[in-house]
Length: 214
Image (cartoon, rainbow, N blue to C red; front, side, top):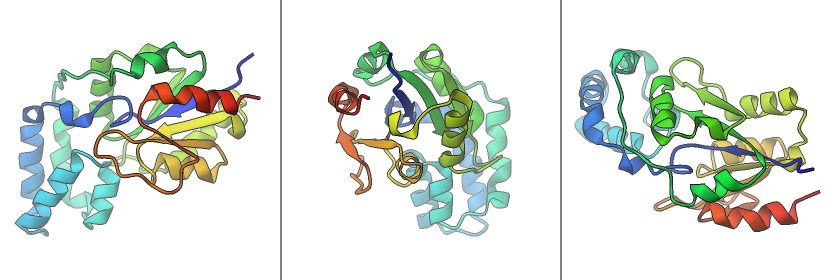
C-alpha cells in the first residue's frame, strides 16, 4: 500500500505563467494602474505589474506596501470577466499524472482566475482536493491548508511531499509542519536554501519518492 501524498503548487510548478496571453488582462491592469497612481510613482507601478506575472499577489503587495483597500475596485474585473486561457501544463506533467500517489493542489491567487487556469489546463480530475487561497478574501498561510489536509485525510507529515517553486510560501509551510519539501526550479526560478530536495522537472521526483518510501 502506498501511503505517500503530494501537495502541489500551480503557477510555475504545473504550468508556466509566462504563457498566459497578457491581452486578456489589459482591462484589469489598466484599472490597477489607476488605483496605484494614488500612492505610487510610475517606476513602482511598473515593478508591481511586472512582478505580478511571476510572483503571488500577497508577496508583491507586501513587498511594495500596497494597501488592499486602495486596489480592491480593480479586482472587480475577475468577478465578471469571462477568462478564456490558452495554456498547457509543462510536458513533464504527464509523469506526475501517471504516478499513484494521492495528490492535492494548493494555490494562491484570485479565485476565479485560478479556477480559469485549472479549467484551461484540464487537470481538475488529477487531484483528490483543490484549495484556492484568495488573498483578497482570506490571506491565510498555506500551512493552515496543509494542516487541514493532514487532519481530513489522516496523513503522516513524514509521508507528504510538498512540491512548488516558492521557498517563502509552500516550501516554508511544508518545513514548518515537518513535511518533505521539494523546490522545483523551473526557468528563471531562484533556488532557495530551505528545501529538502531540488528538482528541475517532475520526472526527477521518482528517486525522491523511492528513497522516502516507508
